[in-house]
Length: 495
RNA sequence: GACCGCGUAGCUCAGCUGGUAGAGCAACUGACUUUUAAUCAGUAGGUCCGGGGUUCGAAUCCCCGCGCGGUCACCA
Image (cartoon, rainbow, N blue to C red):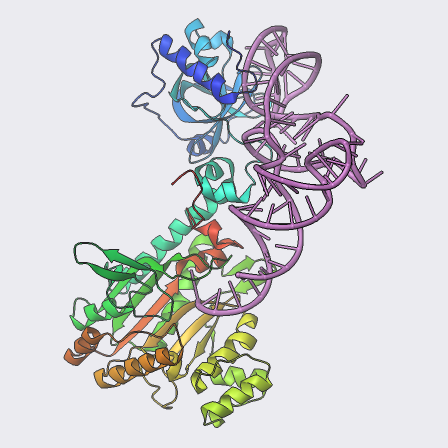
């Protein structure tokens, strides 16, 4: 090469690209007919003995991950695995050997030849023909350490996936998990639906929203924080006994190892079910997931071993708070007393918080982090559950539960509130709370109340955060590892 | 948002109390045709995140800024 391309990997590759073109070879051909992938090939010849040559012809394709002995040995990798290409000069024409010189690590190549196992035991394709299917212009990260720069791994996820098997595995498992959830909910009779992401009224969860603007309507919309109110409208419509939606929610809150501003939820509503049925559902689904993916019922997360085999513990929130603090909040009547009790425990509470908020706060601070093994925490205070139906045996509580695994809430469900008058009152309480300073209180949704006035059948509703579930099921410590393209600060110069 | 840490070659990383910028991989030239983190000889590659300051002299010390990570707070 006349031009000095030393030290400039890109220039060297550009030069080879030009060489290809000069020889009339397309660096980006349209099609290559491969006959087998790497893993099936490895499996098929698992019993081929060392040093044995076959006459079996195959065509394989993949990205060149390594080259040894002046291009005689190439490791190529496809989605299924790796296979070695053996490019011996006695098996290849001058033309083909010439092409070999234009191949770099990182290129996508296709090769045709015969199957053999080397004397040292590596299954290989003895290459007769090879061609570049996609010329790569940028160098891959260092082969031994791979790509470790955390920021670059998320910004350039494709590079992370090329280099790191673990990253591929996590995202594949995520896909598998979503698929199993979908099949399970369908098997219960659920119809999958898609409800709006642009909401004129924020509802369905306590959260800070993103606001956007529609030009033609000249109206602000909230990106949805939860699909709940729309899904229940569909149950009112008798659309199906059960509906579910798998989709993104958006919350304008902090980013952390457990929080991404957009995250994936599955919500499910089933007519004629209650929250007890939803607990059964949660257990059955999670147990199914772990069995199908790992074959057993025990998974490892960090230092913990988590056993998801049924049945799971079920305990009421007040009972658990009482066990932890020796205070039975069910015996405390007034908001002031409750706040005082919290302060005595060293828990910070705001003035707008009533009895229910205080109980939930204490639970969150003192009990939640300890809930490593799967457990359903039941019967939350009305005040923190404006969409849940009052408890059949205690008017201060609702029929709601949250499921905890590894100290994280992974599911939240209730017997749905279907009394329109009570729902209206609850909304008004939310409006009041908002005026008192609760910036996460929900808004009044009159049309939703109207829907209830037409009649929502008795109904169980259930939601689960997919991202955190995937974290637990893949032993991932950062939510970004389970999201293909996590939210990052935009890069300057790339806007 | 607060605190702590980090930012050096395409990648992974050294660089001590301030004294000429280093290695491995990748690239390039060559040797080698049964290697697999191939090996061997050689070449080239740097805005040491940016700006200011201290100093005879700054990758190194100080200040400001930017970016990233971790912990905490809000939250699922």
